[in-house]
Length: 109
Image (tube, rainbow, N blue to C red; front, top):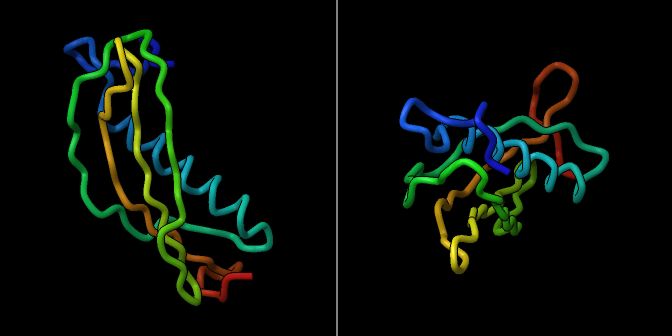
């Protein structure tokens, strides 16, 4: 739910807050699917906000694994909020890389 602390100076959802949630949820999906690995975010493909989001909006995040490499995994993330119907507000591909304790790439398990 979008609360007052998530708003920009126009009273709408701050884009940086949405990016934080997208990053966190992609990480959670990776950790759920690859429990033994430690992940860091490598990249986000395209950052384009389609609609402003008001306070009180309840967001829905849809994540799907779209690519798996030896040490990395890519999730497609779509974000919606329900106005009168689901409104698509954001899409992105998030790449996460598995790393060891020293930050070096390590194979997915």
